[in-house]
Length: 195
Image 1 (cartoon, one colour):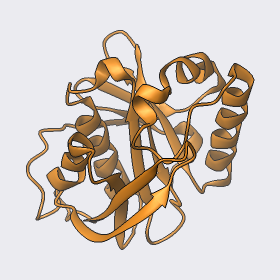
Image 2: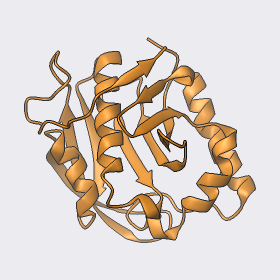
Image 3: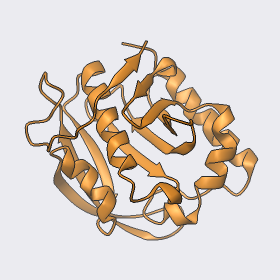
């Protein structure tokens, strides 16, 4: 298995690479209340808190337990957001994503997760991925549905900001050798990985 610290994945419009300390200002600026309403976490209050969180993400990559990827525009390397795979060292990893507000509605979230899913299928053996999403977050629900994901359970959880989330836990099965789950719609994503 490739070290999580050296992952580099490209799609037609995006570059996914491990989060780095240099991403801290972008994360601090863009991970705000406009994007966290349906997420479990809340924005950091200071740049230093954000830096500490990024250091924690990097430590998870070094340990091989979690992969936090910065999403960049492939043409100009503009910061778009982050996607992650938690518990990559288990049979049931969890996938998540957030995009800056100006990138919402562009299809970039779908492209990032579909690209990440292909990479996961090529690099890990797992039972299924979980993708928890709030029932009201329709655009985000379309991401696992496009990968053939199905709702395995529904539950409530209070997020860090104090809101009650009505979560749907999607399960996404490992794809066959062609990179596509038999349940999925063709994602139209082409994958380019660098060692």
